[in-house]
Amino acid sequence: MKIYKPTTPSRRGMTGIDFSLLTKKEPEKKLTKKLNRKFGRGFMGRVTTRHKGGGHKRLYRLIDFKQVDKIGISAKVIAIEYDPNRSCFIALMCYTDGEKRYILAPDKLNVGDEIIVQESAPLKIGNRMQLKSIPVGTQIYNIELTLGRGGQMARSAGSSAQVLANEDGYTNIKMPSGEVRMVRDVCYASIGQLSNTEHNTVVLGKAGRSRWLGIRPSVRGSAMNPCDHPHGGGENRQPIGLKGGPKTPWGKKALGVKTRKGKKYSDKYILKRRPKKKKR
Image (cartoon, rainbow, N blue to C red; front, top):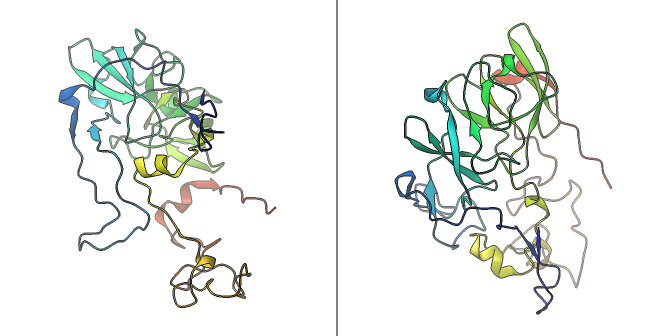
């Protein structure tokens, strides 16, 4: 973690990510492409997600979430790099057949380390194997839900899941949210915890840093007029004055609303729901 000196009011308390551990090099040109961002607009050109827009230009890094076509081929870490499109760092791998690829970089993976993808591989950080070959209690990330589709779960900075049990062709996994679910034991997962574990403790410090990230300002509903928001109006600071609790600008409930379908096909794979947040 990088702590800035309080040379200005906005710098007081500001923190950032320490990039000194990263390799000083340009991104691999063959593994990048132009990124056309929509800035919160839908196919009609209308705003579908508010508070998005602007920000710095980015090149998209092509990340290999599957690695299934490299089974049995070892790879060496050439560089650990920053990726503006995700919260964790990425690692540039060079396989023994000469091909280079980007993968998600786990914590404590260093330049020069070797990894391999196999059905059953040594229990080493960065190695990728089938869930049935991973011992109980091991931390994993980049977990497949469907065989051959690539990792879909536990892909953000500092996140990892834990293997709880292997039984009847399924592996019980405790997710970062606390949810326990079953995944087919032939699906692949990587060993370790993802890098940049201090990402959630970063203090932006000033509005400008949010704008660089493509986040536009948001206005409190209580600061608006009654015609603009259900929370608006009143003299000075007023309570929202609504029986049903906080509302969105369109009059719908804003807190505690379940967005998951009532009868979803994957409900049978969830053994335990994520714990509810305690009210203060």
